[in-house]
Image (cartoon, rainbow, N blue to C red; front, side, top):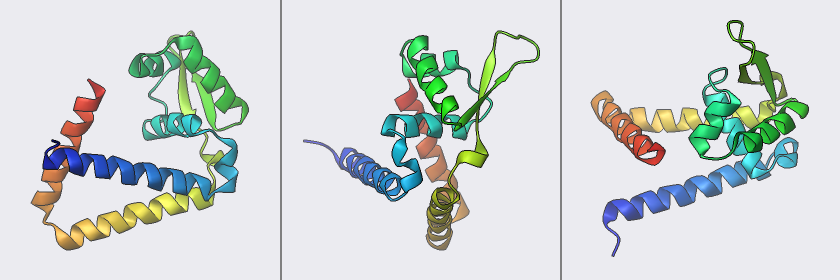
Length: 145
């Protein structure tokens, strides 16, 4: 029988999946992107310019050619930009193309983030919010192991 925390996490993942798909489906501009492509864009946009195809392949435990194929597809659609490393010309860093991100889509995400921030600030102390941050960091670390 699952414990309370397991149920809470299951409900959270459920709600996040619905929210992500609902947001994606409400934006016709992004409808040409697969959900998998959207996840790649989420990874890249969180750390634009930090990752290479090899980094992403290692993170996802998939082959570099699979990642390269997806990145080439996203580059062709102009959602990402590859920039050559000045020190090592063999390396290309992946950047999100801010110009291609639909403004309405970004506004929806920003509105959600602002509402979450407001509700947290209204209901929790800074110490509680910092503790929650620590908990989320721990959760992320466990998933990335």
